[in-house]
Length: 216
Image (cartoon, rainbow, N blue to C red; front, side, top):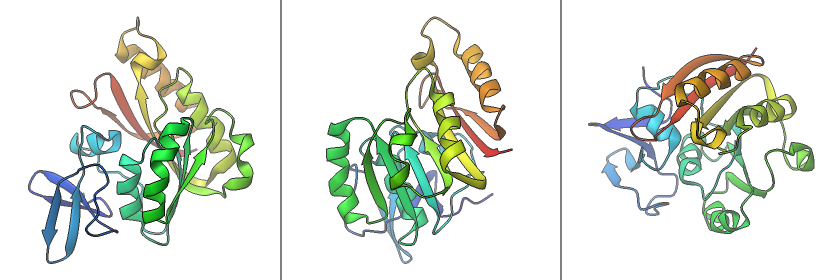
């Protein structure tokens, strides 16, 4: 099954560069008659890793609005930016002021990325900045990462909207078996979402699982 906005050349997955001639994170560039394509590095992006591990149900489309919790410096977001195009929008929430400073130059080149300095745990503090979204993407390495996703979904996710979350077992409990943690987090998420995909990201991302789900 093809993924909207993602091209495959050999074993590499790519997105069409919306800012031709400009790289984001020193990624490989492939040029074809159809344009310039940025190779998605699966070692630098959880979603990239999930795609390389077989994820094909990627609920992203041109023109959609995304709330990205834990956007960091924008590596994964840059590929989402390519896919959603100029008519789409990414609200990128990041707790680290340093990461936001690094993200600002990218947002000036890619007008569909809006950096927001904020805590994903307290969405009520920035509700005035964000409209309802089609998708919430979360990559927040915190013990309560599933609860954070549910809290934000209740406020910002449109009816029928989707979520994607990368869960890091070691951020929840370093002493517990990762598979047990993944099962517990799945149960939490299933109180509010219907999970369609669960991809273990080993060996690309150790002790990580990637969930795709929709609101019940």
